[in-house]
Amino acid sequence: MSNLEQYTLERNGCPIHYWLSEKEERPLVVLTHGAGADHQMFDAQVTVLDQHYSVLIWDVRGHGLSRPIGDAFSIHVAVADLLAILDGIGRQQAIFAGQSQEFTRVFLETVACLHYEPGYTIPHPLLITHGDHDRTGNIRKVAPRWAQRDPQSRYLLIPQAGHCANQDNPEFFNRVLLEFLEKQTN
Image (cartoon, rainbow, N blue to C red):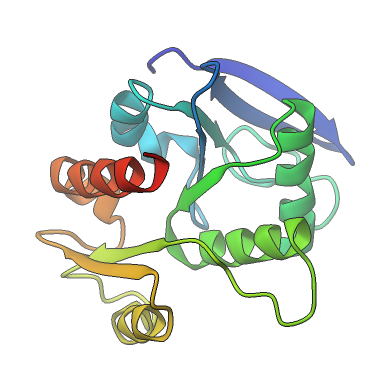
């Protein structure tokens, strides 16, 4: 799996497993999987991201190798786990990417923890995607509305893909992701 090194951070009864490819002077991309998945869902993305960025993938508490769960799972606990990882590797900034509703909640709460103030909005561009065959939950209805509400968002359907669009059509997804990241980091 590229140049990733595996690490473990013990937190409140749970070994949080994460993998890191650190490149000096390169932005850090943090990939967070959705419910029921683990870090391996990003194998196809890590391969291409690792060529241009520092990359961190992790198994959220209670998923993959991050077991036993220890403290009961909550979004707040997952956010605290991610912030502890970032603190441990000495990173104050990161680009967050992930899959499904669990990721979205973790991301938004992480941003709120890093930049809490009344009336705060996310001042950074967002790439919002889903597969054109995704029938999970209400993503087909919510994603376009989210993008319309946020002028810095880019919304894109991933062709020939379902709920795990990054796995269903990795070539297309990777191209879109790299273009978006390049535009934001240059």
